[in-house]
Length: 63
Image 1 (cartoon, rainbow, N blue to C red):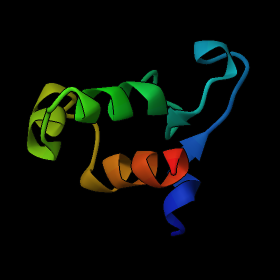
Image 2: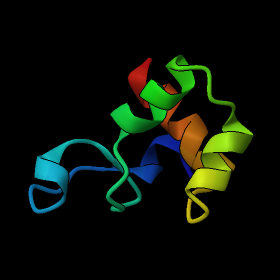
Image 3: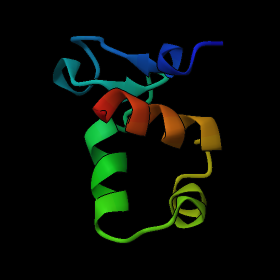
């Protein structure tokens, strides 16, 4: 699976903003949490339905 395959765009979900696997968690949310000092482990604990690959995909997409 290509890492960016985890990023979806659907006008019916979060206004079409890039999301993680169609979930209501945006790339911006993940990047913002990392920028605020949260670790990958803390993000995964707060969002148990996310996977480490999702966090990495958000960073790759943002780059």
